[in-house]
Length: 283
Image (cartoon, rainbow, N blue to C red; front, side, top):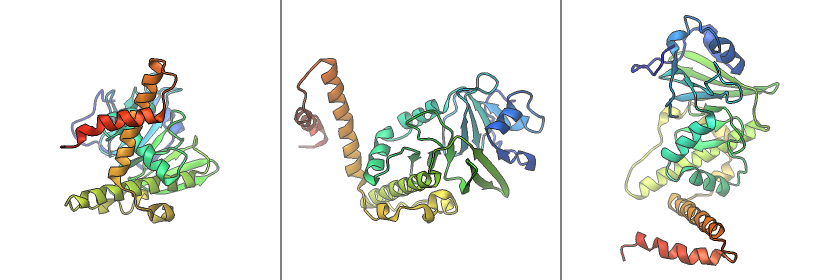
């Protein structure tokens, strides 16, 4: 096993006996002695950051691999990654350091669409999907933008991915109920955000189009779209403004609690919010 990521693309194993993965398979293949044909594909990466090459992430925080690795990540370029961080730490880093407005914008869009459960981090072309609602607990994740098909049978969900003529299956047992419904909500959420980004760019003279390379993946599968949600156009600027106002409201509530202000009202927040926003104007 390599102690760090190789500078060259490693990719995933191409052997047919290593094209199906689950938590049990990972335990059998990686927890003790790693077989010789698998060693070149396995690396340790304590500072791994989620990125578009992430195909699947299995969370082992309750029973770490080799007693210390809480996450096992399948990365289309870097191979199989052993990471000491758990899934929640990896996702929180993505939300805090890689996304504008972090989880707040994601949640605002989810609320506007009328979706209750949080299963996705959407970027328009890229979507990370959690097998359990990620606001509730640690959970495993899948890169929906890589997946072509999904099947559910006997409580097990299998996502299929193809790359360079090779096929891979990623199986999960600890999944949310109504998986297909949650999946449809996630794909719709991602699609709407993508259209909002395109609309915003075009309104400022940029001719932005979503990449056609995703057309065969689940993120572009219109069978999962909630069409009534998509037809109601949303404005990215307005949604972002609402997200920023949410930050201000939280700040006001925490200040009121900290200074023990008993009669703090939403109108008090509105006045301070308007005053603090004057810096946005050139006048």
